[in-house]
Structures are given as C-alpha cells and as structure tokens.
Amino acid sequence: MTRTGAIRRTEDTGYSGDRTSSQFSLQALVAEARAQQQNGIAERIVDAMASDSRKRRSVARPQSYHVPLELSEMLVELKADRRLKDLILSPEVSTEVQEFISEYADMALLRSHGLEPRHKVLLVGPPGTGKTSLAEVLAHELRMPFYVVRYDGLIGSFLGETATRLRKLTDFVASQRCVVFFDEFDTVGKERGDTQETGEIKRVVSSLLLQMDSIPTNCVIVCATNHPELLDRAVWRRFELRVDVPLPGSQEISQWFNRLRKDFGAAIASVEKEFVSTLNGMNFSDIEAFTLDVRRKIVLSRGKLAADQALAEGLAKLRQKRSTPGETDHSRQTDNKDPSKRRRIKADKRPPEGPLPEGTLI
Ligand SMILES: Nc1ncnc2c1ncn2[C@@H]1O[C@H](COP(=O)(O)OP(=O)(O)OP(=O)(O)O)[C@@H](O)[C@H]1O
Ligand SMILES: [Mg+2]
Image 1 (spheres, rainbow, N blue to C red):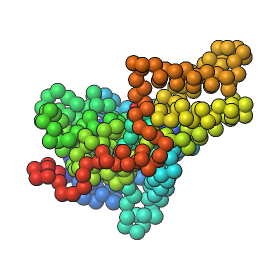
Image 2 (tube, rainbow, N blue to C red; image 1 turned 180 degrees about the horizontal axis):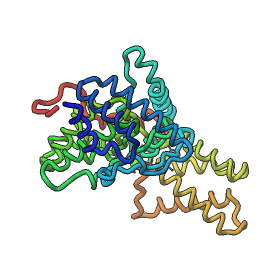
Image 3 (spheres, protein in one colour; image 1 turned 180 degrees about the vertical axis):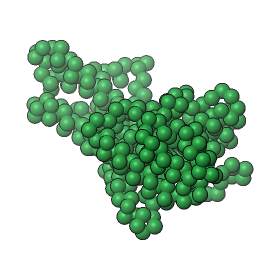
Image 4 (cartoon, rainbow, N blue to C red; image 1 turned 45 degrees about the horizontal axis):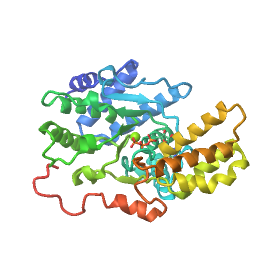
C-alpha cells in the first residue's frame, strides 16, 4: 500500500476524528507500518500516542470523546469509574483478574523479552454476578477508555453489511489503547453449526474470529456470556484468559454484609447469619436491590426503624415469599454453599476439549 493509500485508509476508518495534524501523520504512519507487516513499530507509535492522549485527558475525560461519528451507532464509550476493590470477588476470580492487570501493566518488560501480555478475556457466569462490572474495572485499572459494542448498530439487515461494519469497528479499536467489551457475546458467538441461525450470523462470527486474531495487544478485548454452552470451540479457544464468575457464596455475602456494617453500625451484627443464609443463592444484582430496598425503608421511617429491625423484616419477607406456593425464586437454582460445586456446574457447560469437528470454518 502506498503512503497516500495508507492515509486514505486512515481517513476512511475515522481514526482522525478531531485530532491535530501531527497526530494525523502519526496515525498514517501506524497504518503504513501495519500495511508493511511492521506491527511492532505500529504498536510502539500507538502506545506513544495513547500515553500522550492519556496525559492530556488526565484532568477531565469527556465521554464518547474518542469514538468517531461513523462508529457511534455500534460503539459507545462509557466512563469506567469502578475500581477492583469496589467489587466483591471470590479469591480465584480476584487472583486471576489481579494477575491479568499486573501482567498487562508490565507490557514493556514482557516485550523486552519478546513476549506479549494476554489481551483477550472471556467472562462466563450467571446474570448479575459482575461480568460487566469487571470489564469496567479492567478499563479503570488499566487507565484505558472503555468501549462497549452495541449489537443493534452492528448487525445490519443486508448481506455483508455486518461484516463491513465489524471491520470498521475492529480497525478503529486496533488503533487505540482501549478495552472493548462485547456483552452477551453468545449473541454473535453462537455455535456456527446451529441450524436456527442465518448465514449472516455465521459470517459475522467467522469474520469476528479472524479479526480478533489480528487485533494487537494495545486493545484489550473482553467478552461476557451467560451461556458458555452456546459458544463453539473455535470461539472458546481464542481467549487467553477465561474467568468463571460465580454466584456469590457465603463468604462473599458476608463481605457484602461487612460493608453494610460500616454504614449501619455494629448493631446489625445480630442479623448477619440470617442475612447470609437467606441471600445465599442470589446474585449480586438481587442482593444489591434487596439492600437498597432496606435502606429506603429506613430513610422513609424517619428514624423509627432501626437498621437491624429493617433488615430482619426484609429477610423475613423474602423467606415468606419463597415459601408461598406459586412464587418461583429464579435466583435460588443452585446450592451455592460449596464453591467447588459452583465452579463444577459452570465448567461442565464448556464445550468438550479435543479436535474441532470437520467443516469448522476456522
Ligand atoms: N462482584 C460484585 N461485587 C459487588 N457488586 C456487584 C458485583 N457483581 C455485581 N455487582 C452489582 O450488581 C450490579 C449488576 O452487575 P453486572 O451488570 O456487572 O452483572 P453481569 O454479570 O454483567 O449481569 P448480566 O449477565 O445480567 O449482564 C452491578 O451494578 C453491581 O453494583
Ligand atoms: Mg452484563
């Protein structure tokens, strides 16, 4: 590709946005280096540009600042304020995530030894367990913009349209230091042999897989799913880090309770056991909703309702609801007390190991 061609490609993909002319030239150099297979050089320029833009953004970081207009239908930049310590994680998840963050942050050291950090992450777990929150945490802790893919803007109704959009999207994120998040990834990553699916979806998945391989390490790809069984093995093996995000167990619910204790005071200690046993089996999202409900009641009582009493009443109500015939509590489908059991249940949903069946596209 000629230099002019490289510059035109940069313009087409919308990298330039409202940047200055010097940045524009750097972007053209990146495109040219990539075209000449000099990915190492391209990444170093991208890193330098990102570090420069981080410095400029450190005072205030406006939202949707980076996403070019032509991609705004399929990519949204969200503010990533959540810190790792804000989440309550099982020891396994916490270790995996911390290791990933440290490894990524030490990219320079790895590169000096000819190694690259992992940058493709799959988060698997039931709804409301913190997958989206974890993706946000990664962006926050790595100090990178957080881009979320919008499938309604990505999937087009015309043949080939989706693949073209996907290419534009991956071209853009490949040029950035960023975290790009595909939530409910099974929507696009569905088993390609699924006869219910249209040819378009299969093509999308194939191009996504190919493009995923060509996205450089400056972009962290995070995908999340509640349905790992819908992902085929070709998709599954693309990820360098797969994290099972389980429902909270007794320990994690106790930690949640301890945070409440900081707000409500030691007086609520008497309801801890009841709190943990009643909420065991629920996801964080529901636990959060329950807690907010209790807080609201306390505030509205104008000082008449003590926190321990409000909690005890809320828990009693929840238990009563569960014991009422006809009331189904969807959150209590697993015995969540045994962490090894929680992990085993999810691990069984993984596609079987072994060679891919014949006819697999990738
Ligand atoms: N590990 C956690 N620690 C503390 N709060 C959590 C945790 N996980 C989830 N929450 C709370 O529950 C809410 C929902 O979590 P989140 O959206 O991250 O779950 P999810 O796994 O992405 O769910 P879904 O599969 O439905 O998209 C969050 O806003 C957060 O406040
Ligand atoms: Mg989510």
